[in-house]
Length: 179
Image (cartoon, rainbow, N blue to C red):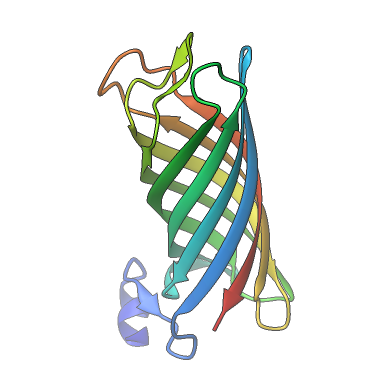
């Protein structure tokens, strides 16, 4: 397969020695929409099949899958707690080797909320949401088993239903990768 990857660098290749890696992720985030504030705790399960593309100067593109179960605490006068469930494929551009391996990431996934209304003046209009995010992070540890990162996440229903104000979160996360 490596001959094919050299001939056609767009082809994905699996790192034969790596196998699959699964991880557990814990994130905290905050959104501030005028007078409505939302804090969230996010538990994620991460699957890294070690698919890589386009090796460029010691860096490469990779793809991971994430599933999330999230609790929102709001100061809203309608729903003070909301749950969020969803999945996101995440594209990463990461350093290929070294003790610390920084990365840039972006993803677009789907989410389902238990309540669309946060307060009498703020609603997301639909329980079905799209979640797009961009972030930075780093892997480290003797087997790259630790990760830390920052993400900017936007949830929106893509105007499936109006109004569609969306909500923006600033998030930090830690992750432990199992072999």
